[in-house]
Amino acid sequence: MRQLKKVVSVAGIRIGGNNPVVVQSMTKTKTANVRDTVRQIRRIQRAGCELIRCAVVNRDDARALKEIREAATIPLIADIHFDYRLALAAIEAGVHKIRINPGNIGERWKVEEIIRAAKGSGIPVRVGINSGSLPGGIIEKYGRPTADAIVEAAEQALSVFTENDFSDIVISAKGADVPDTVEAYQILSARFDHPLHIGITEAGLPFQGGIRSAVGLGILLNQGIGDTMRVSLTADPVHEVAAAYTVLSALGLRHRGPLLISCPVCGRCDVELERIARAVDRRLKAYQPFLKVAVMGCVVNGPGEARDADFGIACGKGLGAVFVRGKEVRRVKEDKLVDTLFEVIDENIDN
Ligand code: SF4
Image (cartoon, rainbow, N blue to C red; front, side):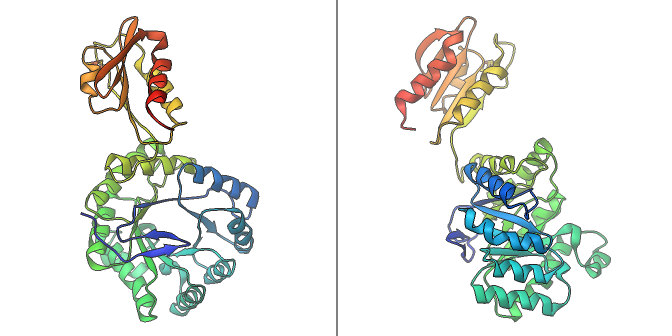
């Protein structure tokens, strides 16, 4: 059951309430390089990204934001650490949201300056706690970035916003440790009604990082926690977006394009199933609707095992079957199997 939070709007993209979990990512270019940054934003957007965040490290980055905002057609978030003046410059440049980690912005008045500017521009702020940069006092108290340490840092950071009567907030409390991060979000969700941006930070390369993120985010989303998410990967951000949709789709929360189901292969299989599955996966990228498409290793068990799939193929020795919802509709030579599958799909759907 979704834990309903207040709704925060980022240039029309609504985060919280009963709105679908919003998928976001971050550019990996130098923000000051407008051309590469905009190009990357467009690629990520085509992959399904709905909010994009850019690191603002210096004045050149801040100056570039205006041009990026004008060229990009998805809401732009500026990611600021340490220097409150960069946050002010980003707000001035017209970004749609900023993300700060109040713990590293320094004195309270600097955070208050940012709050004043955000209020003036009517944009929300993500208060982004990160286990790697908790205030010194909290680390001394807890010894390491435990869930309670992350929550205490978030509460400290949020108090400045509450005292300044600013509630247009999204909270994040990302950690690199999955159980600590999950627990921190569970506590924060119970205590606050601000929407939550969820993620596992420094998750790793795509295979490991995707699994670590899926475990952490999957637990939270399955408990109704999380209003927007990023899968952080050491990889092209397009993979982050694809991974986020895979997590959401696995939980039945959101789907983007077809889902390939393929059997794990056993001794009954007489073909190179992985190669066939990859070929089907590549061709499915051209399809928009949510379809379950199965690639199964044998004709005897395949269609039955993938009864739930909308379309599928079951490979055999020399011959294979194309099936629609568990029922065989064609039997063709093995080398025609993939083409026939797509003929059958095209006959049955409007792409
Ligand atoms: S579909 Fe056939 S080949 Fe694939 S795992 Fe099942 S029994 Fe084995």
